[in-house]
Length: 131
Image (cartoon, rainbow, N blue to C red):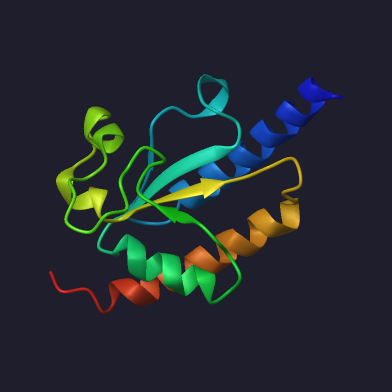
């Protein structure tokens, strides 16, 4: 019911998320955006931040995301996601990639909360990164 309306709403949320997360220094949105992409999912890499560390920091704030791509293996010691390699992602960013998923139940407030958390956590974690 109201499928097109729900899809339009998801694209609007995604566009807002992508434009604002992209403004965070050292952040790369992977793959296509806009109507050339799936409306409910975003892959984002955060330079100089390990995905597992950021994932757990977000978890502490009640934000649940996934590391890598949907096609990656979660087994320790396995190769990086074939999907991330196929889109030509730099090797150094593969270990810094999170997947953000939305649904028809995702709210503007949740997007805003997530973006605020990223703007707070990412710079803090980068201060502790060895280069």
